[in-house]
Length: 80
Image (cartoon, rainbow, N blue to C red):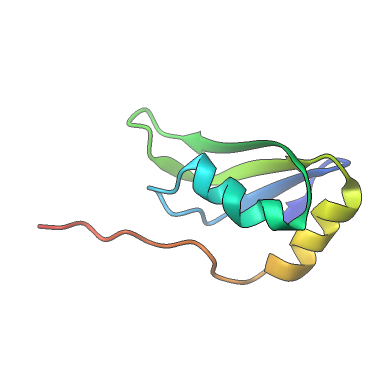
């Protein structure tokens, strides 16, 4: 995670089937969220990155401290 603006975080390595709701539920424990966006391919799967904007800078910094470098989202495997 990287703070790219006043209260906005860049989030990388997002698994392709992760939803914005799942990401929001993970991040909301650190503060009030204004928006969560996962950048997607044409088939609606995640491109592997997204953004989260908090209402307060201290919440964004708290999220960085707690989550940076950790694995915290599921990875779905294909069923064949």
